[in-house]
Image (cartoon, rainbow, N blue to C red; front, side, top):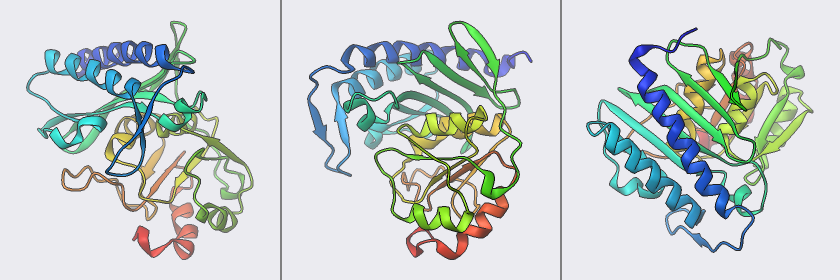
Length: 276
C-alpha cells in the first residue's frame, strides 16, 4: 500500500532523522562514556542521548516549525500544539550503557493527542519500524521493506511475553501466574518490545509500573496499532497523552489484540492499587 501523501513527508523526514541520530549513538556504543543520573527520576543519561536529541530537534524545527515538540532530555521546555512530535533520542539507555543491543531511537507524532505516526530505529541492526495512520506498518532492513502484522494466537496461556530487561517488576510473576504464561523474553527498549509484538515474534508486553513516560509509548503505539495490535494501560483504558502528566501511571499492556480484553480481565485481581 502506498504511503499517504498527507504523512509521507513527515514519515520520510522522521526516518531520516532517526537514522542520523542512530549513527551518532553508535559512535559512543561500547566506549568509555560518562553516565550521569537525572535528578528527576534517577534514570541514566549520556552524551549520546543529548546529541541524538539535539540533531532530531533541529531537524524537526527546521522542517515543521509550526508543530509542537516533547522530547525526553528537554521535557521542561516542551511545546504542545495540535500536532506534537514526541521524541525519545535513546530508548533503552541502560541496555546501551551495558553494551547490549536493546536500545533504539524513537520519533512519534501526535494529532490532537493521539499517535498517528511512529518510527523506531535500532542502530545496531539497522532495522527501522515505521507506520503512519491508516496505512500498513512495516520494517526496513538492508533496504528491503516487509509488512508488519501481529500473530493470530488467541489462547492466553499460549501468548509469548516480552518484558523489561532492566526494570523487571516483581509483580510480573503474579501476572504470569494469573495468565498461565511461562514464555518470557527480556529486552530493553519499549519500542523494540512493541515491535516484536508488531512483527509476530512476541504476542504480549506487560509493564506494571509507572516508570514509562509519554516519549516511551508514542511511536510504539502508532506502529503496533497499524500492525493490528492493541496498546492500553493495564485496565484496558486508552493511553493518555496529557501535558500535565508525563508518566504512564497505570502501566502498559500491548498485545496482538486477539485476547486483549481477556488479559485485562485476568490481570484485574492481581493489579497493585498504585496502577489504578
